[in-house]
Length: 325
Image (cartoon, rainbow, N blue to C red; front, side):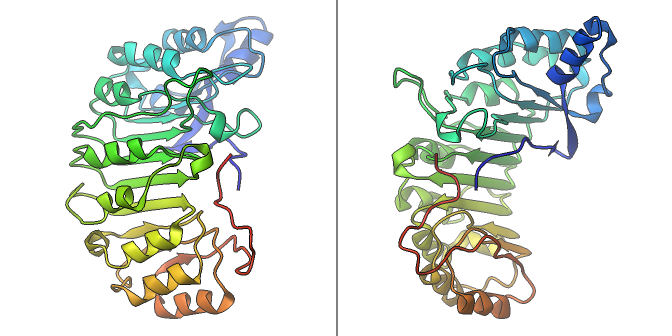
């Protein structure tokens, strides 16, 4: 699996590419001819094309000056570096500086970038804590990428904090730092209903351990949590075995253990652990389960919607997570 398409919907809204519309209008004779949807009816994507002459900050300022920003509820940030990867720090500073002009913002996707634009392991991130502090009403945050800058500095980071409104949080990475996993566990998110972590591999900075993952399993954190995703891991079997006896599972409505190196060993642990029949859905796509084990799962969890798509060969000596580089 690769990230090969831009998202088309976010936070229940269709994504509208502001820069694309602006450039089309400029080609026709001026930005005044740009056709835009109602500010509250779309998730607005701001991104740069390859070899763009404008900077992200310039396009961002055009967006603020063109759209009724006070009614914007969802933003999708695409590629912010026109030629080669660059840190998200400067774009983030511009976004947080404009927080007062975005009082209705409830959802933010950082890094809607395909592999053709930049491999996920090359997306240079920074400490994204200011996004949460600048937007206290934010309900949904998705961050893609975790890499350091060219000098080995920065990289994805998060300081433990309390946020009253956040309901959905997802980190997508080919290698999610263990420090970020621990920081998420250290946060106080009383409204958080959905949490998904793409753990990735050590070669790309994914150094989280089972001890880090275990922080989310005892049921003492995030009292509103109803969906948990611990995904894209090389030790997916160990995660499954821990989840099988985890107190948090009893209050979940859906569970996502997909995208990793899940084998019959991990699936057996799931079936021999606590009942999972209360779940609405169980996502195990991209796996290495035998046909017999897939059948066992379907028979044991007849009332659960199970995703067993994208099977790998169980006897394959080379097993990979879905998203790494």
